[in-house]
Length: 572
Image (tube, rainbow, N blue to C red; front, side, top):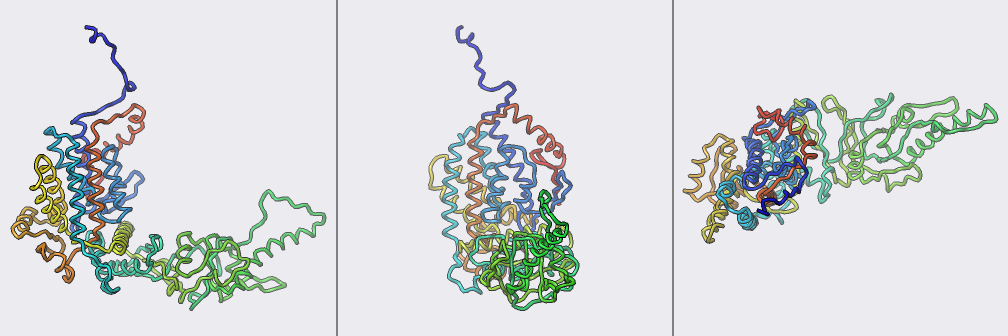
């Protein structure tokens, strides 16, 4: 009786929403599966694109997993984990963003029946982590090293890795053309880890084949004053001066005060202002530079022929010099890295050691734009890809595709190991884990088997997206004990015993760096374990009201978007 009269203990603020237990866990799993279903059809060379229209009216067409996940306005707290691992995969290796989301969604899908049957999540987490370690060890065992090969052989193999990445992109029809371009660009920057040393410039118009690679720096001609067209458009072996100062006439500050005893002294004040800019220009000319670039403005005085009644001043437009102001910080740093120059904050005491040089500087017309191009640079630590295409959305997607390919080639150069793509390595790991599970007693055998089955999502989805019957393909691979599936230009099946050997010399193989698959399995497994380890969600009234508008806008796209966890998405 006394226990019934005890007062209720209130721990949380009134209005706090709590969800816990098995229904909460199943709800989180369903949310993650819904997000994975959004990007499922974008996988592989025959994957579909997504058209995403945001609230600002911007339209994006892409099949890149990281791009889609960033643009989706996901409000479900558990589903946001998949967005994080997609971003992590993109920043770490550049490709495999769709793969990592599919892996995480499939791991949770296979775990769902066990959770509903009352299996404790920690048992699943323990088995999943064990299976993950076994899978990574098997990948390292099957990986083929490209270290120690000649430059030409290495470029050929890296080109195949880039082509594998580009085959699933919008520019997949010209994958060989862009793959060689990407490999040359990555090799040009050498061991430099700065990705911005490879510039990508977009020029609407023309077609994909009009794109070209500059072994140096290229950037759009900046704003110029009258007289710029009189400057030469081509220099051989010029000296280059890089500045971070303004080269234009500037008056004193507005709050400056000068007291004059004689009105005639005013002219001396004006002459002093002119002499300051004259002195700067003379020092630029005397240092021997033929090309002057500045991050700040270069005014009309420096670009026009200027004369007075008393003297003739040599400025940049006297057919011997060319200048460009308001050059972006990124382009200026790339010019410095390529030409060996140093950005100066003053024109005093400019010595030859701080001047850059190149074999050829020219101004070239590209579409409706004019480009300043520096080629034959001595340092050679930068490259520029000039992209051409019809629509702006197409060029934007091409840039994202090339970014993925560049990251893949860089990772392949650093890690020097590759594995067969197209679902081959996934099938082999799945087969290996199934065999290993037979040696384990207890419920862990079932959990590892479910993990192995989840790994088959990649080849199965490749077949589905290409229009093949995945069941027939899997039956064929089982009967021939194979594990290589390709869904581009037809279906190829290769014996696992000759997988890596035959693909080295075959003209139609698919490769990807081993680090892509290793990172994807690691990230997806950790994400799945993280979702499985959550058994209660607490929403306090303050955070709930703060997310109310976002949730309402997300529900507004429910008719088209699918499960109401994200904003409006239309499949292209």
